[in-house]
Image (cartoon, rainbow, N blue to C red; front, side, top):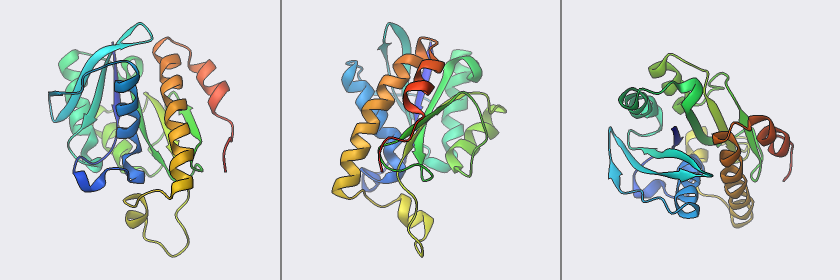
Length: 191
């Protein structure tokens, strides 16, 4: 079984913001694979189901971005799962243009507080990540204001394409095809 955790903030006011694109991917997966996201468990909204024939738990932590690790670590412990083998985390990345995704099998937090929290709480940086590009912060903007802001219409269209790509990539990852996912999606596509 895989835990697929999309990072974001739970309040309604954060819907459709750059920082909540991880939640958007989870919603798209739930829709695509008819997974009911109604269960509240260990500080998260969860849904169990199948993605490309593999059992998954889709997760939207309710702990807010900077404490995402509290929920993710608790779920890994509850199901006795190893992050290196059974965890995929989906989150926003300001270093990628909107519409691009990047897949990694492990790595650093890269300055992302949600990933820092997961690494800190699981004591591991060895877990798969799907980063969804939200674009670079404009000069003079506060980073928090930028990531908590909404996409322009053109950006939203590009990001919707990236969300569909992320769903496809996750299908590859759960079937042990990380190389295929990286080869297909780790190239610059949209500006």
